[in-house]
Image (cartoon, rainbow, N blue to C red; front, side, top):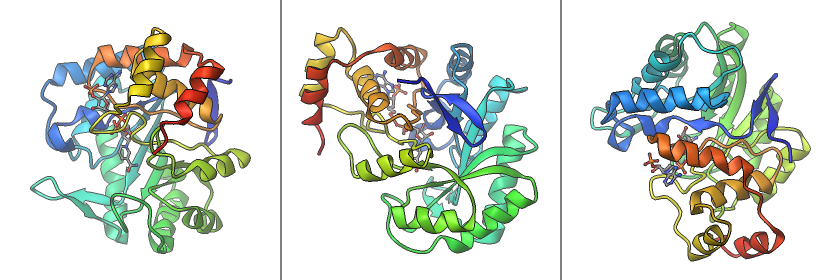
Length: 283
Ligand SMILES: NC(=O)c1ccc[n+]([C@@H]2O[C@H](COP(=O)([O-])OP(=O)(O)OC[C@H]3O[C@@H](n4cnc5c(N)ncnc54)[C@H](OP(=O)(O)O)[C@@H]3O)[C@@H](O)[C@H]2O)c1
C-alpha cells in the first residue's frame, strides 16, 4: 500500500489534515484557544503532513488566517486545498454563493487570507443541497472557476458534494483533479464512485472521515481497536487507507494529541479477520 498519491501535478502523503475544526464552535468565529490552533498546524507540518484542506468560509476567514500565521512562508512541498461556493451569514448560517461575482470574490479572499499568489487546488462545492449531493447543473459556476484558472489565480480544480454525473459533466469543462464527498466506514454511498475515480487516477478525499461533528461510535470499531491495541479513530482511518489507493485523508482535529493519534493510523495494518468484521459497520 503506497503512502502517497498524485494530487494535481504534485504528490502528497495519503494522510493529510483538515483545518475546519480550527475555527470556533459551529465553524464560526475565532477558536477557543488560538495558540493551540497554531500548535496543531505547526505540529502537522513538522510531522510531515503535506496536504491541508481548508476554506475561507471556515470562520469565515479565521481558519485561513490561522494557517497563514502558523505556516507562512509555506514549505515548498505543502499543498493547501481550498473550497468555494458558500458564504456565512451574520448568524453563522451557510449561504450558497454561486454567482460569478461571489466565486471571484471567494478566490481573492482565499488568496489574501492564505497569503498566496495562486491557489494550488480549489474545490467547487455544490450547494444545490448543502447536506448531500443532488443532481443539477454546475456548468455556470465551474465555467467561472475555469476562467479564474485561465487567469492564473487557480492551478487545479476539484469538485465537492457532487454526483458521478456532475463529475463526468465537469470533466468536459475542465480537468478535475480531486473529488471531496462525505464518506467513512459507516457511510459508504460512494463505494462505486471511489473505484471509478481510482481507475482514472483521480484522488477521492472523504470529508467527515471520522464521522464529522459527532465522531463515529460503533461497538465493532471499538472491539477491533481493542484487539489491535489501537483507538477506534485509528481503525477508522486505517480502514479508509486500505479501502482504495486513491483515498487521501484529511481528518480534522483541534488537538495535538488527536493529531498524533491520527497520524499513527498510517502504520496500523488491519488483518483479514478485522477487515471482514469491519465490513459489517456500513450503514
Ligand atoms: N467538502 C465539504 O463539504 C466538507 C465538509 C466538512 C468537512 N470538510 C473537510 O473535511 C475535514 C474533515 O472533516 P471534519 O473535521 O469535519 O470531521 P472528521 O475529521 O470526521 O472528525 C472531526 C471530529 O473528530 C474529532 N477527532 C479527531 N481526531 C480524533 C481522535 N483521534 N480521537 C477522537 N476524536 C477525534 C474532532 O474533535 P477534536 O477537535 O477534539 O479532535 C472532531 O470533533 C474538515 O476539517 C474539512 O477540511 C469538507
